Length: 537
Image (cartoon, rainbow, N blue to C red; front, side, top):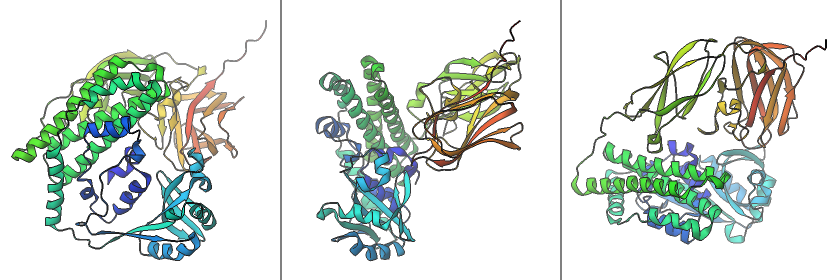
């Protein structure tokens, strides 16, 4: 299920519940457990703003031990880990996962997460070999020696020294059972009388709680609402509700997630918070959320199904050039509809489709120096609806041989953690932005300078999630690579190669080994050809 690649699921669900659901997904139609996940906005407000809960502690109404679904929970208590080990291995040999509680201070990846050392956390045990257990704790998969888990397990309170697993008593869910689960969903929806006044009350929390606490709690409010609507849409789609109703749920999820992401950014820079703008966006989300509930209630009551309307999308606005070079153009545009649904943008060069992206900026590369081009951007959604094309005309710069050669040039990467931490953040001349990869060792990034150029210096600026081992490589054709530096003891901060006498078009950072459990995070990849010092007359 795609939900398990969505960080939203893990950020706004308890660690134990998210681990169990991920494990059950391989053997069970998991959507059946999402019949009761629709949360009234008033209840979310009460739990988070009033009761002070966060996303991890939110009391989701997900009953894994549902009597109709044949999922049997097995819980056994033990005095210590070694007495539990043989039973744990027996369960894993049966192809099932095991869940245990551990003390954070013994688990190295919890230290990296800056978790409370005295805190207690759930781990999933997946495999065992050579006295090591493979554990999963999204997004981390690690191996731990038996002795480490023994210490971590033995140090939790006696009532937490339990081993939990799940057994399927049936693999054939009857139609009657599915119908009964659907009736439970319908009853929950029809019983909802949410007046959505939460969206009006929320802004008043700013004065009551101060900027920082308001931002943090609001981030959890919208994270929970987004996940609620997303899981509800998964249940509805699997149960054959109309495309229009499913789409409305997805819109509600998307707008809430967009607001959550906005608060995530404000958490880094609270001074950018503007109450009037927030109130306006709250009202927009309120209308979308209310429309979804009214639509699905109407469909349940009357059986009338709503189809997706085939209507053109709004054209991207304020398309502009941010920077031009001798071989590239960095463009940006605005589009508020991307806050309501998943939008992809087609990038066209002289009326020829060049690429697609989901962010609202793009670096067009492989251009000729001092040449005129027409660049177009068109919005498209998953139903095939398209906007008119926004266009602009531009001319590239004359050939640049000296200075920073990499700024505003196309960057290609093996992966990106999310749509904000993408490759071109390495060359945007902004010290506050970065590229971040997925959480695995073999990753890379390279910049295309546009043509083969002289290179005298290369500078990298690593964040705390740096590469312990990496290579710096050059190429003229993307096929033949020259290794110019192998780093075996990488450090965070700036690393610079100087006094180079190289020629290349492509400069690649080939990451081999991470310094910690996160991916690679790089603020800057700069390539220079420094001008020769003037010779005194």
